[in-house]
Length: 133
Image (tube, rainbow, N blue to C red; front, side, top):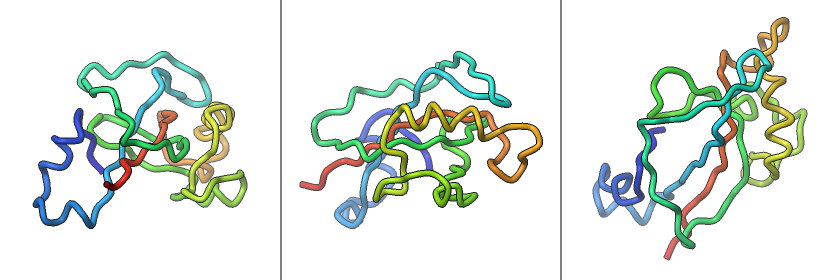
């Protein structure tokens, strides 16, 4: 998955006739990350997204590993490591609230629990989908 600053830029990477068969997702990350359970401030200077408009609906929250290349996310322990069997998720396989994500994030990259998550750092991400017209 790649991330782009605008919906137009994201749609431009594929042929127009394929657009009706695809969904466009938007992601908003909080300005913090978790490294070995410790919360750190974090900013992404290379990303300049435009504000989302009312054509987007929030689906939920995920906690994802996000390493060197800031143009795409790494793994989600909810889906990649089966953590969704241990925590409540919504119909989109996501956490329902930011509070749940903030409680889960510091537990994922803990020494002595290498199978709980992938190597971090971990970021909390809101997941949005553009409504189809």
